[in-house]
Length: 112
Image (cartoon, rainbow, N blue to C red; front, side, top):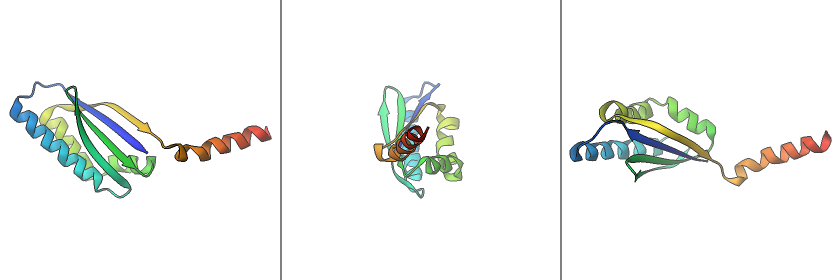
């Protein structure tokens, strides 16, 4: 499963603060990548936004990550120091992750 988080800031950051924010975002991605069940977490920059792409084993792993104190501190820093907030949170599934649900639904429809 791939989770994409997009953060934008409500502040006008100068070049020095902008670089510090990027470093804090890199550190947050590193913290996320070390969680059990998270395969990777990469930081991307785009149109004034910080974009994180994290590959996890499942929704449960992604939800547990939100409760992790290290994640809360690392991503919280982006908010309280640099004004970044989540503006988009999307999940993308591999077809293999969806097939069992489709097959179960087909079986239920076949017996109805």
